[in-house]
Length: 70
Image (cartoon, rainbow, N blue to C red; front, side, top):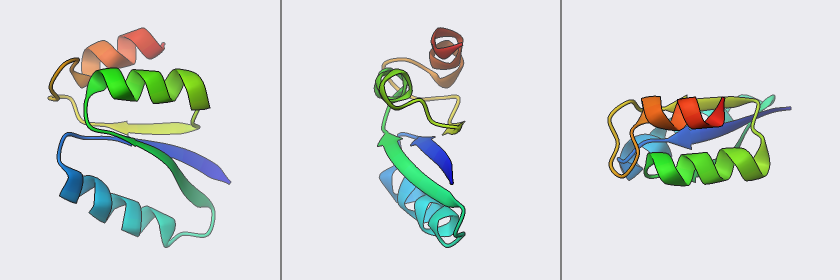
């Protein structure tokens, strides 16, 4: 099972992407974040296999969040 974290400020986009990903039997969306700070928190707590993150988000952008995660 591949565990995925979605990070994007647009809820409709996250919802659509989650529907597409979870149609695949080996994918599980284990969390969603609306900004970089929330993505960072989820990533450090849950340790997803993949993070799909928008670059331009409020609070902490995707580039900064990625640097913090790495």
